[in-house]
Image 1: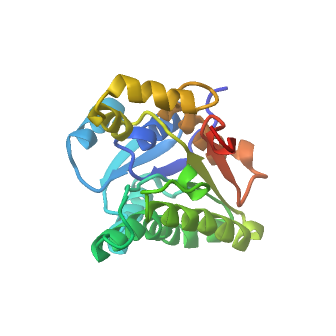
Image 2 (image 1 turned 135 degrees about the vertical axis):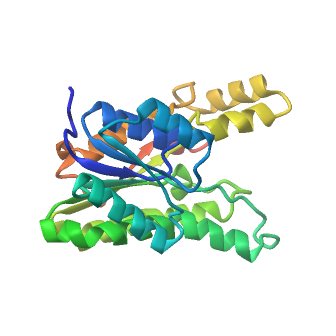
Length: 257
């Protein structure tokens, strides 16, 4: 099926690498007008502009933890494309620390990006969406929002909260034409996952070990997450609201290895 989001204007935060880039690229393929975003205009942003730039795309540098920058990004998107129909809140960061050794700045930055960042974007687009009676939010959460892995604090706390934000806002505005859903990926072969595997003492052995932990016996790809984001961002999912979808190959359903 083609043109599943034809002419919809969609902001994808954190979209110059990994899952975000895969989501934005697939949305473009399916006819959307896409606003790419990252917090820094670096080589990855330049690559996006070179590969995916065109009349249906716009790159905007903005730190989603900064409300003023987010509002400026949304204003630029509206000035360029006329409106915003949907948002995929993908931007996030990993903060893994010992709870008692973690710095206050690590805690604050984790929540500023992984939770408040998504809320900043939603808050910026919501008034116009409510006025039109149409809007669609997709938050990229994590399997960490469902299951706890020791040594990953406070990231799971933020992701649990993001799923709570998703469900709360989905119910709050359901009768006014707004849908809010989230996706919780498990281990996905993003650039950061590849870098982590490469840093292991025996990368090949660790990759094989991770594959064997998954019921499907392989690691997921960003494109596979992107297809679920595409579905949720489309009107095909118009009766799905305040819901989180796990994409982890069944791993989170395993009680014991």
